[in-house]
Amino acid sequence: MPINYVCCIVAVVFNALLSAQETLQNFPGSAYHFTITHRIPSLPVQDQGQTGTCWSFAGISFAESEIMRISGAPAPKLSEMFLVRAVYFQKTERYIRMHARANFGEGGEPHNLLNSWNNNGIVPLGVYDGKDHSANSQHLNNNYCHSGLDTQFVQFLQPIARHSGTILTQHYANATEALLQKYMGAPPERFNYNGKTYNAKSFAKTLPFKPEDYICFTSFSHHPYYTLFPLEIPDNWDHQQYYNVPLDVFETIIIRALEKGFSIAWAADVSEPYFKFDKALAIVPENWASLNSNQQTQCFLTPCKEQTISADMRQYAFDSFETQDDHAMHIIGLAHDQRNKPFVLVKNSWGTSYNQCSGLFFASLNYLRYKSISIMLHKSAVSEDIRAIFGIK
Image 1 (cartoon, rainbow, N blue to C red):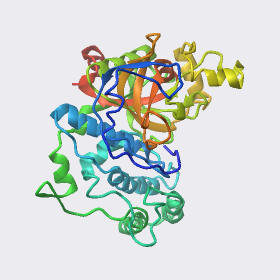
Image 2 (tube, helix red, strand yellow; image 1 turned 135 degrees about the vertical axis):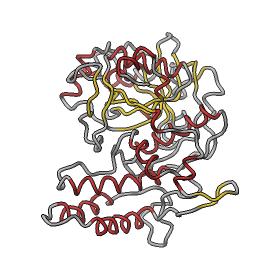
Image 3 (tube, helix red, strand yellow; image 1 turned 180 degrees about the horizontal axis):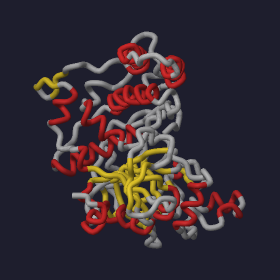
Image 4 (tube, helix red, strand yellow; image 1 turned 90 degrees about the horizontal axis):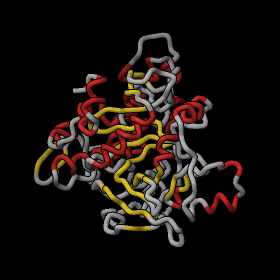
């Protein structure tokens, strides 16, 4: 999901600031007062820098929280760029086999974590940070910067993809490796961790995260509810199928999971003017377009009435391309404001210095209903009746 933001300082302390306070504001001077009722442990907020790899940051953050939930112990900080690097090999092969008629880019969905985890394993961040530390590094101030990477990929892949001869796997694999080394360096084949030697696959097996236990949901009416379909968004490049449920059920799945201590990987549209990360708030004010600029600003200072979101409104926004698959994030808690209106607490990947909530923000349930693309969560977080409808065991 391509969102390029200026690089920030990566947080190096556990983001417990908000969990240590019962009531807080989204920023100093705001009249909003949020009470966090459920908070799922997570590791520090990261910064994706000048990359479009939010899906990896959301997926890895989600996996880390799942490791802590399942094990009841601290999780290792895992490498987002190891995941990105592995997925690029999948993308290049698909692009070639689709004769260059496929989406190719930095973007993806959190579920890309699942297949890659099974096929490639994972490594700790301390083992591989995905930065080229050589003198001619592409990274700005030692932060992630993938500017130009996709253009170079397409330049060498298109002639191969459009060639009528035999696909020379080793040729494009070698070229892919060389390009990734330029931007991301190379992970070690073997490494030592806590006194033991691993490779990526053997290390993954030591963790309690099992990809087969995770499922994805969405809610759109252009396909029948209670069926599976490959969500038609550019970043679903591998045509993953999603469980489709009515909007009220979709909302209930989210709330139920968070109440039971399960966090959620969340893909959503964040390009709307009422998504204000600097104000740590995402809402859908009623009659937004008819408000003047002062009234719009006031919506983020003082609780305002929000638009009631129906399935038809949601579908129209998706069909008209108003709702796009912009960004992936990690939902780590439930909260309510002083009016008792429900919000979710979201961990972003844009560093900690863009807002006053250490890189977290609050999103209203109205915003989730309107602008969510999909969610990924552990299957046991979903009620038995919903699992039974889909035959999920």
